[in-house]
Image (cartoon, rainbow, N blue to C red; front, side, top):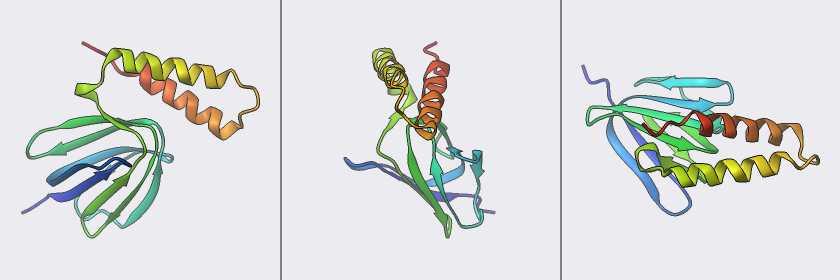
Length: 132
């Protein structure tokens, strides 16, 4: 029995990833981590900073994402994001820059609670990425 579905990830520059042999995707949704398998109910959700885990017949991949919207319908998962990085290509100095920029934003007392929550989430995820 075929348990695969299609995934498309798009960012402002280009179509970032398109695969048809996906078996599972775990995304960092506002509601918490959400796993998506073939024949999942139709859904639209927002992404918060976190790691997208993709399992496919051709191999597993992980991506750091800062934000986005996902839609799953008719066994097609579409993810639109303004910022996504493959963890295996992510350089330590970029992580450090993102952390520094985020910590600087947190010092601004005028930011609202929602933005503060998202920045803290981003910092936690960036600190959890290891370079072993």
